[in-house]
Structures are given as structure tokens and as C-alpha cells.
Length: 211
Image 1 (cartoon, one colour):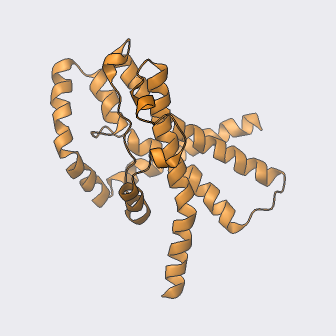
Image 2: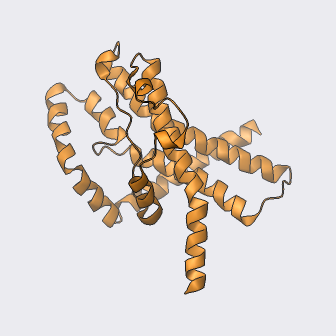
């Protein structure tokens, strides 16, 4: 029993850096792109920083550690400050998942280089790096799901005709129910596993070309 608890605790500790990095990078990317496109709301809200305290929600972080489902503080934007609100909202929405994929790829490069140059790595260090890579990939995949208020829903809403977009936005009141359903059923496994393998395969090909 104590061994099982010890293993669980060690995995949770190894899991924590990946979660924090994924959340912070994701939200910072939203803020950075929004400001670059003319909306200074994230800057005024103190979100244009890599300081975890600006982005982490304590309860959301705890839920991620325990249930692998949680949240960070969402970056508030004002689309009326954009020169092209529809296009720019899509770009801001894409920034978060894209930053997670970039982080995952850079982590893979770091792992390959450490192995290539025989850098002494403990089992714990390998586990932390693998978690950082996988968690960031999962963050990108999850946030691209077209379920309000995830990034994928923002993108889909901007691509829909106005009447359909309004109806689609009304689904946000049921978003928690949708998330519970997909988390309590094997639906996500049919999405995450193939996409994880596909993304890792692409990363490996690119890494082989670069290195």
C-alpha cells in the first residue's frame, strides 16, 4: 500500500513541472499574440509574463494533478481592439496550442541531444522530460477540441456564418456537461492516442532531419 502511494506521489511530483510549463506557455502565448495584434488588455491584466503566479488557478492546478482535468486563468481579450477581429481571434486562439506543440518539440530535441551526448540522466529526470513533452502535446490536442470555451470552439465560431456562430456560442452553457461526458467515456482515448502518435511521428522525422 505504501509502495503504491509512494509511486503515485513520485509520479505526481514528476507530472507537476509539465503541467505548470504547459499552462504558463499556453496562456502567455495567448497574451503575447493578442498584444502583438493590437489588444493591450492582457498587458494591463498582468498576463504578459512567464511568471506562473499570473496564469495558474490553484484549484484548476490541483484538479489537473488529481483528476488530469483542470484549468488555468483564461486570458481576457477585447476583439474590438483588433484590426481584423475574426482573423485575429483565430490567431490568438491558435497561439496557445501552437506554443504547446513547440514546447513539446523542443523537449524532444533536448531528450535526443542528452542521449546523443551521453549526458547522465536519472530515471526521475527522464520521467519529468517525457511528461513535459506528452503533457504539452495533450494540452494542444485538448484545447483544439470544438467545445466551448476551449480554443477550438473560438476558431470554429469565427469560421461559421453569423447565425450559426450565435447558436454555437449558446452551447457554452452546456460545456461542463460535454466535458464530463467525454472524460467519463473512452471518447478521448480514440482522439488522443492516434493524434499523439501522429504528432510524435512528425516531430521525430523533423528531429532526424535537424540532428
